Length: 379
Ligand SMILES: NC(=O)c1ccc[n+]([C@@H]2O[C@H](COP(=O)([O-])OP(=O)(O)OC[C@H]3O[C@@H](n4cnc5c(N)ncnc54)[C@H](O)[C@@H]3O)[C@@H](O)[C@H]2O)c1
Ligand SMILES: O=C(O)C(=O)C[C@@H](O)[C@H](O)[C@H](O)COP(=O)(O)O
Ligand SMILES: [Zn+2]
Image 1 (tube, protein in one colour):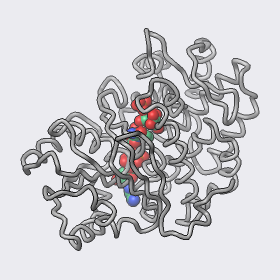
Image 2 (image 1 turned 90 degrees about the vertical axis):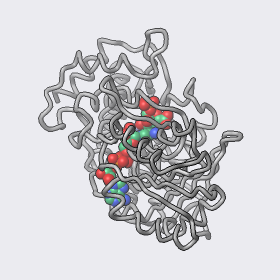
Image 3 (image 1 turned 135 degrees about the vertical axis):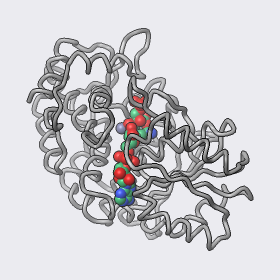
Image 4 (image 1 turned 30 degrees about the vertical axis):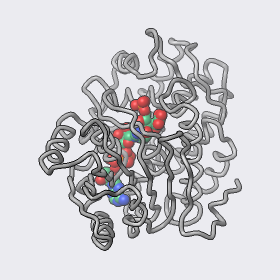
C-alpha cells in the first residue's frame, strides 16, 4: 500500500467529500482538538456553538475543546448525554432538543458533535431537526466514528423496531479526526471500530486488506503513521462512495456489508454493551462471506482468512460468542425484513465474490442464508 499520509510534511491531512454545495473537508491528524477554534472558525457566527458530547468523552476531551473555544472568544454551551448506544433513543433525543431550545438558539448556532458514533448520529439528527436544520461539525473520538460514522451524513436514532430507523441525511460542515484521542479509547472499542476499517478492504480494496493483515496492531496500539494511514484510506473510500450516491439509491449500499445481519443481532441484544455495533458488523461480514461461499460465489478459504484476521485482533466472529444470548433465528430474520434496503418487499443484500469483490443483489438463497445465520448463532 502506498499512501501520501505516510510522507505528508503537514500536521494534518485533508480529504474533500465532494457533494456540490454540501461538500466538506475531513482533517486527519494528531492534536487537532487543541486547535478546534481555528478549524471551525469559518462556520462560527455570533450565536456561538453548542457542544454535544457523552459523559465519558466530556470527562476526557471536552476541556481541550472548550479551552480552544475560550482562547478564540467563541461563545459556547454544552449538553452531555449518557455514554453508550442507549442514547440513540427518542427519550434522549427529546431531552437534548428541549435543553437546547431552552438555552435559546438561532439558525446560525453551530452544533458540535464531540464523541463516537452514538454522539455523532444523535447530534447530527438534533442538528437536522432544530429550527429545520442547523449546521454541525463532527469531532469523532472513536476509531469507528473517525473511519465511518462522522462521514457521509447518515444521522439518526434507534427505535424498538430496529437500528437507525428514524433519522435524516444531514451532512456536517467539517470533520476533525484527531487520531491522538484514540489513545484513551478502551481496547474493545478500538477493536469494534476496526471491523469497519476491515469492511473497506472487503468491499473493493483487497490491497488494503493485505496491508491491514500486516499492520493491525500498529493501527490499534499507536498514534503513528499506520493509524493515520488507515483512517485516511477508510475516509477516502467512504467519501468516494458517498460522493457518487449520497442518499443510498445504489452504490452506497455497499457500505452496509455485514449490516443487515449485524443490525438484526444488535436489535435482539437491546442495544447494550453486550454487543457493540462494530462487533455485530464483524459477525455480519462473516455471515455474508459464509452464505456467499455456500452459494458457490466466493472461494471458501477467503471466509477463513477474514475470520482469522478478525480473530487475530480479538474481535468476536460468531453470534454464539455474545454472552447470555439464546438466538431465535426467526426473530433475527424478522428484523431483517425492516432493513432500509428493502424495496418492493424484497431486501437488497450486500453479497460477495471474495475479498474486495462486494456487490448488491436480491438473489439470496434464503435456505442457505438461514443455515449461515444458524451456524453463527450455534457455533
Ligand atoms: N452514521 C453512520 O454512517 C454510522 C456508521 C457506522 C456506525 N454508526 C453508528 O455508530 C454507533 C457506534 O459508534 P461508536 O462505536 O463510536 O460507539 P460510541 O459512540 O458508543 O462510543 C463507544 C464508547 O467509547 C467511549 N468513548 C468515545 N470516545 C472515547 C475516547 N476518545 N476515549 C475514551 N472513551 C471514549 C464512549 O463514551 C462510549 O462509551 C452505532 O450506533 C452505529 O449504528 C453510524
Ligand atoms: O454510511 C453508510 O451508508 C453506512 O452504511 C455505514 C454503516 O457503517 C453504518 O453503520 C450506517 O449507520 C448503517 O446505515 P443504515 O442505513 O443501515 O442504518
Ligand atoms: Zn456500521
